[in-house]
Length: 293
Image (cartoon, rainbow, N blue to C red; front, side):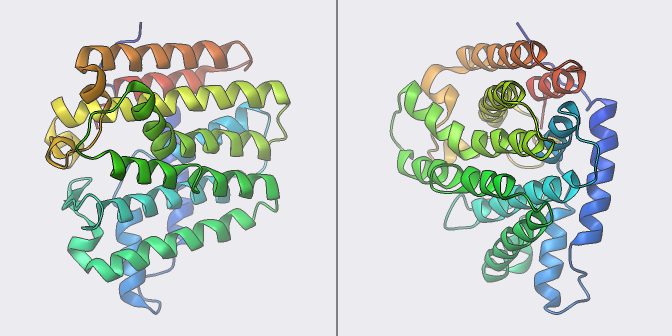
């Protein structure tokens, strides 16, 4: 059973994060370009930090499936821009009304609600401009499907509808799989698709993405209860304050820890059986299982 012990990102994740940050910096409009305030808000949100987990997963998937070219970078950057747009909108007063994100004021607190809304829209647009560079309709469709009304948006809607009521395990799993898991699942699939992976690889990597995606959100729920505010960069207890449905709220903290650990172990077993060099996937899974922020 994997233990949830805090750990630093492995060297692979650190190296890939630097490459992704460099690519993003070159492809986000300058804050000196009109409309300056909007572009400043975009750069502020993207450069606020973060683990870059999703684009790193896209790179790992692409490389594991034999991909050698640079075409993965616009796709990986696009996934991160989608994630960032979702955080901006999630923080808005009409949604979770959060004041802090990654230890600094949320975009709407710094630039105002209207600019934050437009910044999220702009990041969504820029993400698909970058995805178009792949010239791969299947990969583009994969991203659109992951964030649409059968994916992230469905999870967000179900999350809103669940506020203040007791859920079943099946209901909270649906929310987490859609709101968080579908984008992570889509990310590893995009890497495999762009690399021309076999059906066997694609199936295994898809299951791996589903497992770590659900584990990621369960651990997120746990950290909102017992995490370190300084490491999280935001106050703990916001889920409870906002009457949010959480995995610990349904099954309890200890069972949530066990479920997350089992999902991590299952993900590693699945990917190790098919991928010839699974070390990067294993390290990323362990990092998710042990993250403290």
